Image (cartoon, rainbow over all chains, first blue to last red; front, side):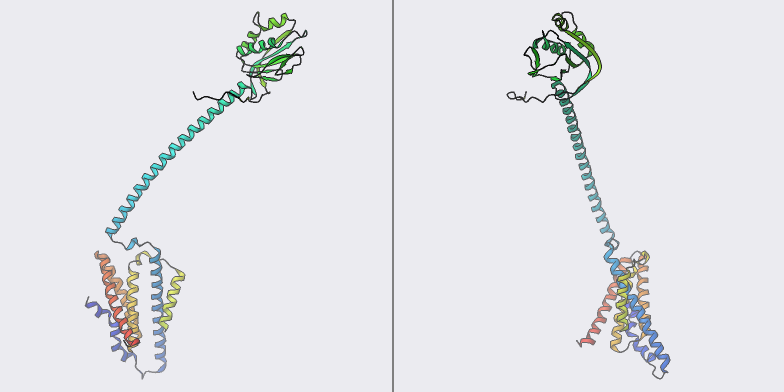
Length: 259
Length: 110
C-alpha cells in the first residue's frame, strides 16, 4: 500500500523534475508551439476518453441490475429467495387450476341441467299443445251428413285416440289439450265454443297402427258413428305435422307445491 | 480549459451514443475510470502548483489506467479480484482526496 502511492504519485511529483526540461525557453518558437498543441490535443483526447468512459459506466451501471457485482453468499441467498418464490407461485398456479377445473365442471353441470330443462320444456310443450309437433300418425276424416253426432261422440274419438297413445291432436284446426271442451252449438259440434265445419279432420301423432286399430275396434267409435249414418275414415301417415298451437294456460288456483 | 471542455464533450458523447460495455471490459472500466480521475486530479493540482507537464500527465494517465486494470486482472486470476479492486479504489480514493485537498488549499487558501 505504501508502495503504490509512490508508484503512481509521479503525476504530481514528477513535474518538479520535468518542468525544467519542458520549459527550455531558449528553444525556437515553432517546435515549442507545435509541441504544446500536440500535448493539448493529447490531453484533450485523454480527458474526452475519460468523460466518455464515465458516461458509459454510469449508463451501464444504472441499466444493468446489480447482480453482477454481488458476492457469492448474497447470490445464494437471492437464489434461495427466488426458488421459494417460484415454489409459492407454482402452488398458486396449481390452486388456481384446481378452482378453474371445478368451475368448469360446475359450468358443465349447469349446461346439462339447462339442456335437460329445455328438453323437458319441449316435451311438455308438445304434450300441452303450445309447440308445433311432427311425427308419424293418422288423419281421421269424419262425415256426419245427418247431423246426428254430438259433442260426446266426438269426444269419444279424441279419448280413443288418447287412449291409444296419441301425443298431439289437431281437431279440425284446434289443438286439443287439457282444457279443450266439446259441446253442441245449434245442432253442430263445437270445439271450445267454435262450431266446426264438416267434414271434421283430425290429425293425431302417435303409433299409426295402434291409433287405426283403436278407432276401428269392433263396437268402437267408428262403429258408433256408422250406426248414426256417419262415416269415419282413417289413413295412416309416416309423417305429419301439426302446426296449430294454443297458448299456455296459466293456473289461477293451483301453484306448484314443493313435494 | 481544453481538458475540461474535452471532459464535458466526452460525457455528452457517451450519453448520446450509449454504447454497451463489452463483457471482457466490464470489471476493468470502473477501476480504469477511477484511476484516470486520480490522474486528472493530480494534473489539476500540478497545474495549480505551477509544475504541470503535459508529458507527465499523459504518461501518468495512461500508466494509471493500465496499472489499475492490470491489478484487477491479476486479482481476478488469483481469485481475489473483488478485494483487490476494492483496495485499488481505496488507494486511489485517498489520493484523489489528498489531491482535492491540495487543490482546495490553492483555490480557497484554506
